[in-house]
Length: 140
Image 1 (cartoon, rainbow, N blue to C red):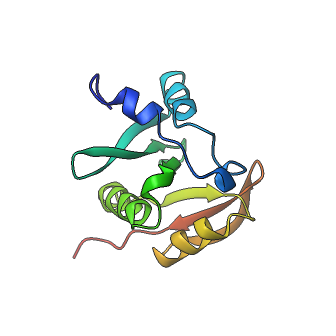
Image 2 (image 1 turned 60 degrees about the vertical axis):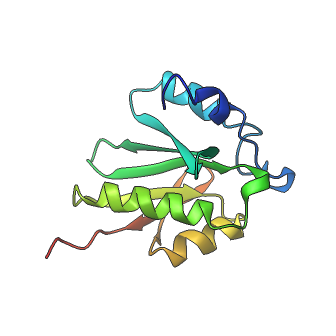
């Protein structure tokens, strides 16, 4: 995030049917990262345009977490979320630590996306969300 793109990120809004799982605007995630020492916000771009938000953090056990992803309604079903998670996962995997995220059990699109990227449910819950984990492969 920088001084030039935070407004565009704040205005990112999901489809109406996703508001049971993510906030109405990415602005909520920006505020969370401003008030937390754990999370860092990132803008998601398609070409030169901000089309989403994702945040990452490091937990007390040194695992990496992906959270707060929202893709603007007009940009959905174009692979933006998949590309954002894959790019962030590749970067976080360099630390060699488990990568975790969580999603609501009723959020079938999230479950499908994360499963296709190698995240496996751990059986643990964070509030009302399932935790899934990806174990990075060691460098060759």
